[in-house]
Each structure stands twice: as structure tokens, then as C-alpha cells.
View 1 (cartoon, helix red, strand yellow):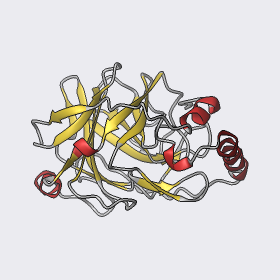
View 2 (view 1 turned 120 degrees about the vertical axis):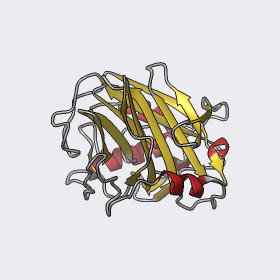
View 3 (view 1 turned 90 degrees about the vertical axis):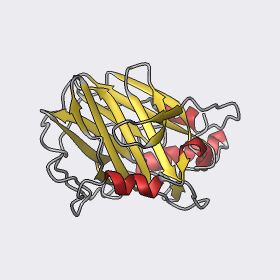
Length: 260
């Protein structure tokens, strides 16, 4: 799985004041949640709802929703707009179920399971007709340790640059959320309006749409998920040093890398 070239990653480190949000308000009839939605040209929709009050620089929970054709092999959402060193939400169909997996990539290969982002599956998850939909409360999607080893939190006071990838090819073992999967067929980036995604109704939406969450963020009878550890693999120091050189050479602040 290779979502972007190293050159593109480097380019993504350069800030731009010209970015404009490409998301729009969307109310999900099944859950009543009001999201900010990005409808991609590939027919996949990415939706976010946030708490009404978020303290600057502090981690926060998100409600996310992905809607895609059920014929898709897999879909991935990158929370920093690039493949490596940020949480990845990956979903795919497994018969009439929707599987989800928390991942992080430490290089340009299949992402490893990642324990620090956990998901509580909510109502509005499943396959109906030709549509696959995944709805969840995520703890750990908004903050992580970046490639420099420093804590990073997505700034909810402005637009955020996200990315996605997808493939028409099914994952190797659909029933196993630690499965491997093939390289993507398509990728995309967009700017999401996070201020517009905030709502004082956030806690009520979670409460009304909780379906009996099990200990590790799974909905019994819905998907079956395991939380994994994702230790940084041996040999990761070299890519870290490379990215640090990229930062130095570009003179860019890593905390602005969401601004293209």
C-alpha cells in the first residue's frame, strides 16, 4: 500500500494560507448526527462530528462516518493527510458486516496495527443494499506522536488536511482485522471544516447511538475487533532522520504540515 510519494510528503510539509474547506454539512438520517461531510469524486463519503468545546492543543474524541459502495475492497482514512506516522482508519466488507482496523504506517508498506486509536462502533454501521457504512466514536484519531517523536494534535479551530485511499481488491482475510491488503487503486486529499463539525450535541449523539460497546471498542454482534500494540519497528530511525532532514531543508514547521 503506497498512498503517496516521498516528494508528496515533503510538499505536504509546506504551509499555505490559501487552503479552503471542501466539506459540507450533512445530517445522517439513521443516527441524527450532524456531520461535516467530504463527498469524494470516487463515491466515498467521509464525515466528522466533534465536541462543541475543544481546548487548544488537547486531544479530543471524534465521531467519524465512512460511506462507500459495498463492492469496495477496502477504504483508508489518514488523519494527517499522509500515509506515514499518523493514525489510519481502515474499513472493508466481510460478508454482511463492516470490519474496521486501527493502523499506523512506519514506511511505505502495509500499515501495522495501532493500539493508541480505539473505536466504539455506533449505530449507523452495516451494509444495506449496495452501501457500506461505518460509524464510530474514535479516541486517538485527533492526536498521536509524530515522526519527530513529538506529540501532535489536529487543530480543531481551522480546516484540517485529510487523505484517503481505497482499492477494489478485497483484503487477504476479511474476517481478520490484522489482515494484509494490496496497494491502493486510488487516493485523494481534502480540507475538512473542523470548526463547522463542532456541536454541543456531541455527547447526546454518542449516548443515543451506543449499541452496547464491549471492552476494546467493539460493538457485539457488529464487527468483532481486536486492539493491537504497534511498537515502532526496528530500522525506523532511518526514515525518521530523512523526514527530519526534509523539515530542515524546507524550513517548515511540522505542526503546520496539515496545510498544503
